[in-house]
Image 1 (tube, rainbow, N blue to C red):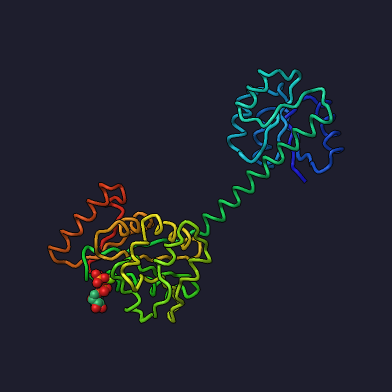
Image 2 (image 1 turned 135 degrees about the vertical axis):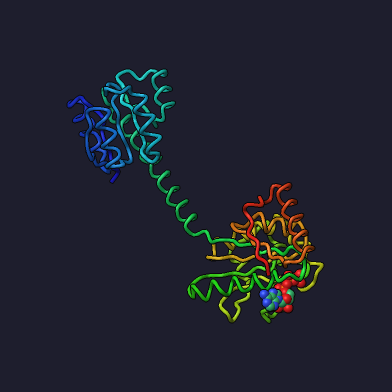
Amino acid sequence: MTSVVFAISDGNLASDLTGILRELGDYEVRGQATTTDQARDLVARVQPEVLFVHEEIGPQPLHQTVRDLSAGYPDTSVLVISGARTSGKVIKALEAGARGVVAHPFAYEDVSSNASTARQWSEAIRATRKGIARVVSQRGSVVTVAGSKGGVGTTTIATHLALDYLAEKPDGRVCLVDADVEKGDVGAILEARQGVSIADVAKVADDMTAQTVNDALIHHETGIRLLLAPADVRAAEYVTPVALRAIVTVLREEFDLVVLDAGGHVSPTQAAAVEAADEVLIVTTADVMAVRAMRLRIQAWESLGVRHEAECKVLVN
Ligand SMILES: Nc1ncnc2c1ncn2[C@@H]1O[C@H](COP(=O)(O)OP(=O)(O)OP(=O)(O)O)[C@@H](O)[C@H]1O
Ligand SMILES: [Mg+2]
C-alpha cells in the first residue's frame, strides 16, 4: 500500500480524490491537513510516499510549502492539484520540487498516471537511501602504516596492529596488505607461504570483483587474511596507484579493518596507500635522520594533496 496524505481544505475535493484513489486500489489515505501548518505536522508524522497539495491551501504560500516539504522529505513525492493546469503553473510547481500537477476537476486517468509516477519516484528514492545506508554501514576502516625510512619497524607495527585488533575482537574480519610491493616482508615475518600476490590482483584491476581479491588472500593461522607482495620484484610495477585504490575499495567492503604496510620508501604506491586510508600511522625511530625523513615525507604528501600533517599519527618505535 502506498501511503498518501492530503493538504486540502475543500472537503468535496478531498472526498472526490479519496474516491478515485480507492478505485485505483493500492493507495491508503493516511490523513488530511486543511492548513499549511497542519500539513507540515502531518507529513513529519506520517512521512507519506505521496502528498497531494491543493493550490488554494493557506495561510502560507503554496510554492514555499511545496519547496519546504519536498526538501525536508525527499522521499515524499508532492503533487499539486490545480484548477487550471497552465504550463506556467506546472513549471512553477516543478521548480518548487513537486513531481507533477493534477488537474481539477479530476480525471481518473490523470490522477492515476500522476499518482503512479509519484509513487515510483518515492520508492526509487527510498530504495537508494536504503542501499546507501547499507554501503556506509559496511565500510571497514583502512589504516595505512608507513615508515619514515627503511628498517624502522613499519612491518612489525602493521602486523601487530592487525593481530591486536583480532585479539580484542575475535570475530572481527581483518586483512593485512603488503603494499611495500618492491621489498615486502609481511610473508616472511608471518611465515606465510607465497601463493598469488597483490600484483596478480592488480593485473586485473580494470575488471576486479570481490571474488578476484578474495581468491588472492591467504588465510593465516592467526585468523587474519593476508594479501602479500609479489615474490618477483618485476611484478611490482602492476601495482599502480589506480590498482591499489581499486583493491582497497573492495577490501573495505569485505573487512572491518584493512591494514596497509606502505613501507618506508617514497613511491607513488606509498602515496596512494596514504591517500586511500582513513588513518595514517607514520613509524619512525627517534634519531635525527629518521625524524628529518619523516618531516620531508609529510611535506611531500601535503604538497601533493595526499594528506595533511594534522591527519597523520606518529609512532616512535
Ligand atoms: N618494537 C620493536 N621491538 C623489537 N623489535 C623490533 C621492534 N620494531 C622492529 N623490530 C625489529 O626490527 C627489525 C626491522 O623491523 P621491520 O621489518 O618491521 O621494519 P621495516 O620498517 O618494515 O623494515 P623494511 O624497511 O625492511 O620493510 C625486525 O627484525 C623487527 O623484529
Ligand atoms: Mg617492512
